[in-house]
Length: 301
Ligand code: ADP
Ligand code: MG
Image (cartoon, rainbow, N blue to C red; front, side, top):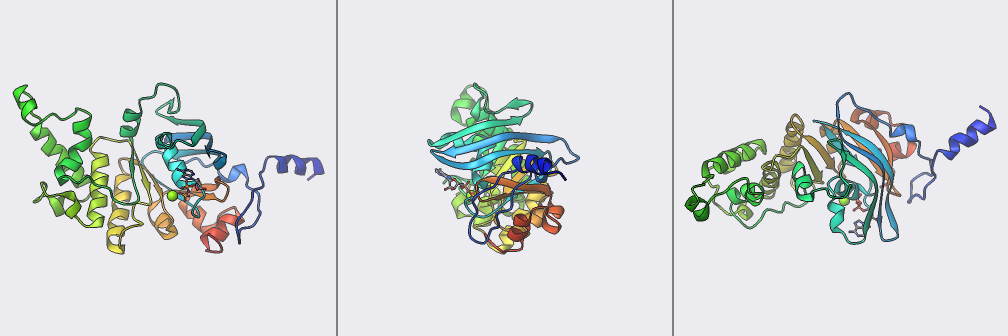
């Protein structure tokens, strides 16, 4: 290779500041240009996120395939949650956050002016790290979204107006709880307070609440990190099942979990960079990047 060719190639790469134990290997664009066989659900292009002066995500481009599980892994602080939140504009709620770039979903950039955020977050739902059910009945938790969006009308006022969707609500609650693999455990106590459920059940209830509004994409930020191994394994099974119908993007700091449940894995490293994105098997068995290999073999992070 001529010296000019080397110089040109080097210009296309970026050097970054690294943390203890991490090498200074440069990233290469081809390590992150991954296309699956399936259709793309969300297409992210040149996404930068800043918190004030802090550059939390650095020029991320990636396509998230439909009806599959995409895992986001990487050490703490590398921007996984920030990236996940940027997929349904949850960062809008953080005052100091500024987002540049595009996130295309259903043929439209979600960052365009005039996007209906309530509708967007219905289509791209989110499940958080600690289960956060409302202090209401199990039924009311699942029906919360549809009631709020006016899809289900019930109670005295509705009855007086000749409209009562109780049957519809019943069916929706059952369907959502079944999809979240919780129905068998709670069907005899739907009017009990959700806070009486175990942590694992509460998290599956939050998943049911998210499913009840009919999302296409489900974003999960370390959904099992507060749970014991048995509850975790139920959530993992559920995630794999959900991916038959939904697009699931899951942040996890547990690499074994990513390896078990995901179809493709994106590795974020220091500096808010996406360093490598590929089939999960490739990432764990033969990554291109030395830093990714060092990370997954536990040399840092
Ligand atoms: P991860 O989920 O990979 O641990 P985060 O996305 O939470 O990483 O954070 C990425 C960087 O952005 C970190 O340096 C973090 O301190 C910063 N950050 C995250 N959330 C906020 C926030 N709400 N306000 C300011 N800085 C934030
Ligand atoms: Mg996080």
